[in-house]
Image 1 (cartoon, rainbow, N blue to C red):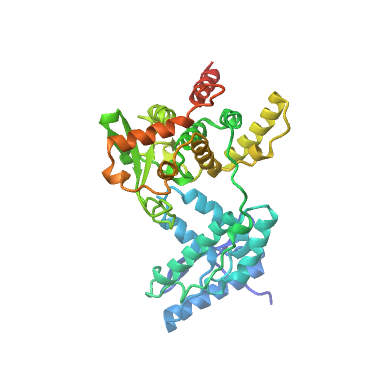
Image 2 (cartoon, rainbow, N blue to C red):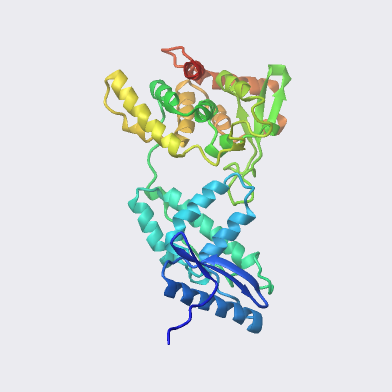
Length: 388
């Protein structure tokens, strides 16, 4: 006699999904992660047994990574970086999606790490994914509780991160020609962010999440500064200002023009994209633009292809600002303040004379001395060309 199929399984998009009402528990809805009916039934039996153990005997049910990742996404939909988190979880899912939380450890993550390394991904990028795993496991063991009052996980495992110094490369400060070609190839929203970043020396997240409420007017100098709170990173574990102090952003003339062009676009974000702040600048558009910029510069200048430009990182814009300050003879103390390495009392007890000195220092890097052509002119001319 043929075995009767277990009810509660539906085939969708090549995978069996559970949709079953369970007495004393409620409705169970999740993917089995397999297109094999027999394997899906075994998984459902296992889940039913775990639920029975929890409801009858008080034994903590075994939960898989995919459940935890889904809960994290649902609980944090308002986070500006949630799309990036979802992308990271989608990269992790083929490797640990069906892995029980209590069996996650360095060994079960090894295949994911190896695959990402073979794709040429940096240790820092891989560590971002591992940090998300650690965050979810900590929540599962300390905060998340089921209908029986039990945490999802007894205790979180120790997950080791990679040594980022092993893949660290030297900074690549841009010259003005390289900057011009890069800006020409960037999409409009990244043009303005890049031009601002290279003129004020902020970090990527400081420009992505810059808010109008952080602007402080300085009427004596007919200008303003931005004071970035040290803990602006948000609830998802992201850090704010790196050194733990509020960060003052000094605007030179170029940065002031960029800020002026951004006013009245969005009430909250200085550099919005489709009404929200970007999770990061280093996206697919950035990587494609830098390669096009290197190709275009080689073609138009008849110089060798510039590998440095083709692989320039967003953080290199900060290094560019710092290198130009030093070349312009700006003192070490002023460079430290302008780059956000130390703010002293400027953020809370500034004087007009101190700020005026810093603004003068920052203005020494606003133009290419040989061209005398502000990069903002390039943005404006490019925009006009597209409009015709």
